[in-house]
Length: 470
Image (cartoon, rainbow, N blue to C red; front, side, top):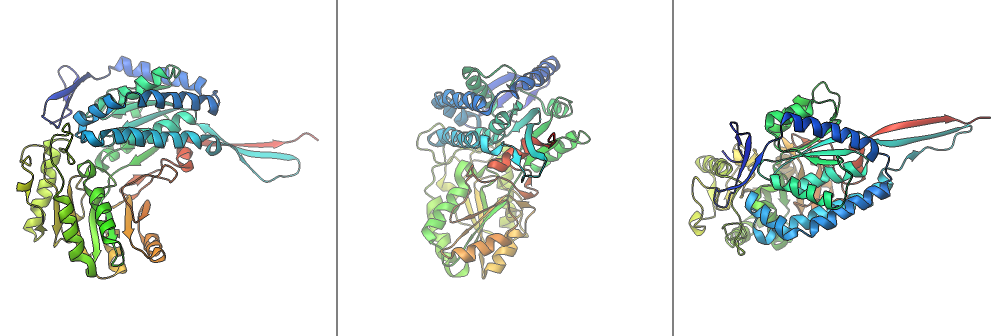
């Protein structure tokens, strides 16, 4: 049991997937500390909402500068806390900054009052007002990218933020707090708390919390929703995915293989928008599989702190065992493996180190094609038509992203319009453009982050209906 809570000392232990050592130990917040944080946030927000968007921007941009100054340490911590290969770890810093800068840049326009058409004798407009205190619950797999999606727009809209980060990545919360402190953000506007699951549920129920932004599993999302029940507050839920790719016969095969495999195996497949199932036109199926297998066999499974590692360990042995079980079940049902685990010597049952795997002869009776895997495995099916691909892609409880690879843009857009998904990609996958709304359908959650629409859930409309004196 990793990232566990020591109930006798109330210490939260973070075990590194690299070597199973205790990498971080933190004491969870006491009831008194939680109470102080809530009161401080509510008080600070009443002043913060009076600041201009330009002033908020200065603080947030200064935070990003301070954060980037510590990139090397942040990358090393990511490597040890959650297993990101060190050669890729600093990419999350760059991605976080890109998203934050975009949301800061569009804040003035996104939060501007909506002016209505002139009406004789009246002035009418709708103003966007902050909600109050936003509780952000962030996961370990992309700990900065997911957190910043809500933190920056919440602050730019005039809210205060309390962050609860995953017990697997507690130093991420501390790094953000450090950067905000260097930026001299007014005290209480941004805070973090290390909390147990029970304390997290209790915090959601407190009257000072005005909105909850959660990223995590479907099961945990249900707990968050239940904890907020009856409070009449907003809850944003970014949950799981079983994201599909469809490679049409007219696609650039080499480009499609490179994109799909990277989308499936980057971060050891531990992403809500990772490619977990691929459908390929009959005409190019064998060539696609051949190129995909060759590419996957080039991965280097190793310790995430080794500079040549391209595939790090999963977050813990329990997660790796879950994927192993999905693969075993699929093999028992007739699936075919294409990767020999012997080519990846560190692969060993009982450890987080898991060889990547490509499966064919799969179908939707297998869990590997319907349940979230969240690991370095992908199933590939051949299809005869666009209509068959659409039916299979929609045959899922999830709907976060979906992608098509094709040279025929019109045909691809028609497919995209038929898909039940929050984001549709053509000739790319596994990427968040901060100018576009990030949302999901079905069990992938509800709500929206990023883009101008991301500000809507963190504010409330207030109408002004002014009759002018005659």
